[in-house]
Length: 248
Ligand code: NAP
Figure 1 (cartoon, rainbow, N blue to C red):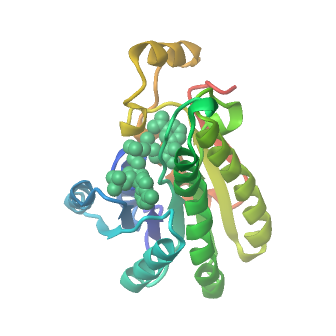
Figure 2: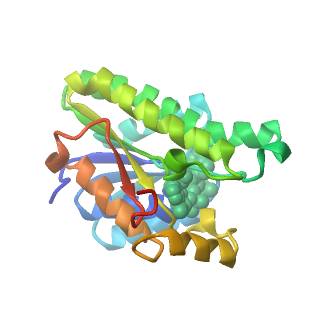
């Protein structure tokens, strides 16, 4: 299989896009650490689904917005599986409101969960990856909102645009170690994150999407698996949109 012998860690893999990513990596032969924040029950369901399909996975609780917890997550994954080949920074959240209404906590929560978490997990994983001398893959989930902007999401857009700059910079730093760093920018997908959008807004987004529909979490997962594989060995610093053409 494409990822036989590989170990992957997916942050925020108890639900939505992260769950689909964890399941597809496992279906392609990787042993997967499924990180979650507070939803232990959902993480257990993901582990059971992976095991039922013949894969190997463990669940690890950690708040990746916190430096010490992200470090513990990396240490625990290496302790359980021996090393990490693939890190997928997927955990994310929203606190949508107009800037004039936005409070400091709404700004900090989104920046810490979406952007600082990427720093936290990369910081903890890069040294062991470099020391192992087997290369590696880091895949960061950004958003088309980081490319286009979106009213009511200054915090979210800033966090996701930050991920794109971070991805390019780290790709330049560790390319010589055969570690690739790429980002995926999803458009709109039906998950808990977008469940609060009203029907009119959803219709507007779909009308603006050339392919005329939302994506499925699996459609992001397939790209993650490709970027994680040897087939993507010469791709780094890239941001790939999976958005049905929305941000074209
Ligand atoms: P979701 O359904 O709301 O799931 C969020 C996941 O992140 C959950 O597993 C949650 O864990 C985890 N999480 C949240 N805060 C965390 C923290 N501090 N530490 C560890 N895990 C944490 O979201 P989604 O729609 O699948 O989104 C996944 C990623 O795709 C996010 O980065 C999001 O910004 C991005 N994205 C989504 C869309 C979309 O349309 N859905 C579009 C573009 C980009 P618990 O279950 O334990 O709470």
